[in-house]
Length: 291
Image (cartoon, rainbow, N blue to C red; front, side, top):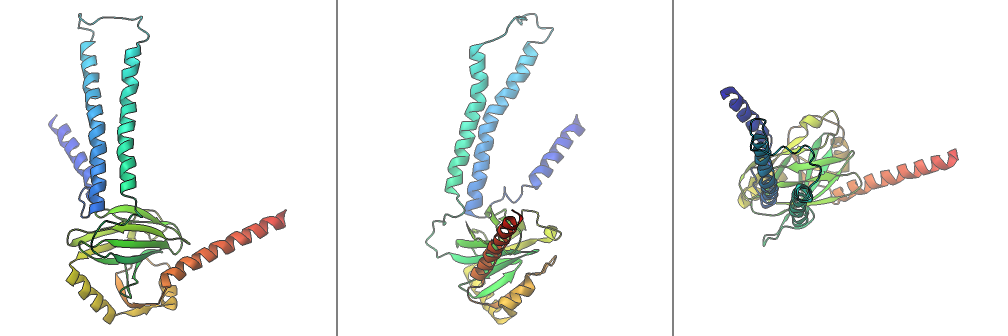
């Protein structure tokens, strides 16, 4: 019995260990998402626990040795029992569905965070196999490292240079997809100074295991200092530099660019969109030729 309990504890610890980021929020979005998980868990436990206890109680009461239990081999139907059996899962679906529905609208990734602080705009490009972060207002960029000021909303605009990918910082909140030829929106915020892991949450090829980045949440002064230091080192991210960067590479160490060509992000999205339209045109012409 002792070893059985120890095994249960170890399994539970390992399971929760995989959810450490989600259950340890460092921003308002992640905190609200954790609350949705707790609400859903509470609703389900409020129904599951009585059902488990009732099952054990029925098994004990209707045991063969209990002579007081009524033996009814001809019993076939009870409307009250049917109502009870179907009302419990129905109530579960309504309550959990309601929590998820309201939470999904309140935490819409495209909805800006209510704040009196001006947000920092960051443009994100998922590459093979690394992450590019462009700060259009600061005129700098970084690879596999995102630096943000604490207490300031971050407005993300995301796209992909090739295959579909998924941007996810578990301790800050919502996962969002990046897709070639289009831009998606995401708003996050870090409320505590620290370094948080960011990952690619969607398999994208050989370099996927190393496609991760760090998010450094710093003070306003720390962010301003990082911007100044970044502007003094590294090269300029122009179209030629981007063409070299976009080539597949694995386990890329973080580095920065001291300057960024104007409208580079828009050109990345437009180029991918043009490539898709060209591909569709070729397919359409090929189909007509076959006919």
